[in-house]
Image (tube, rainbow, N blue to C red):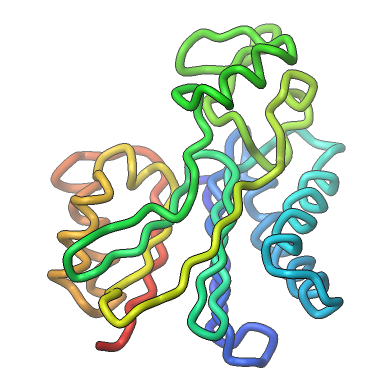
Length: 231
């Protein structure tokens, strides 16, 4: 298990909500480092006057810079909720979705070679591809954006996050974010069905865990954060 996470329901002492999931590889150092530091940089940038999207970009880049002297890396998905808006950021294949009574919407972008833009960038930077891996030398990595992984930065594996903004409405049930240990076994629609069945966050994450680890016999790291909205 090389995952780490952070969750604060009174972020900055202002009643805001912040959550982050970090799926590490080549050791857990990068994931733990991001969980301990990324939100601190984000809050400092936010309080200095930056918009949430800008604060996310700065905090992801700062976390990656802080990992330059070691070899591990991590994917990341973060969300910040303020005044009825959800601001998201991600690098890699961790994902966040919003589930409504009759629809589901993905709030983040999966950064893998299936994405044409991601594939063209790493190829243009000199990477080789042994699908699904971006390859440099004798080493490969699946996500095309990560925090850390200094070895792969020269072939276009960047720390720049995709960012998003979403206004919560009365039909929304839950925000679910998770590493790829969930999404490799369950589609957005599958997770939405569970969210509608289990309106309590703790019950929802237990149901998702059971589905992946027991019914699908998943063996990958699995970390899930659910925020359920009052009806």
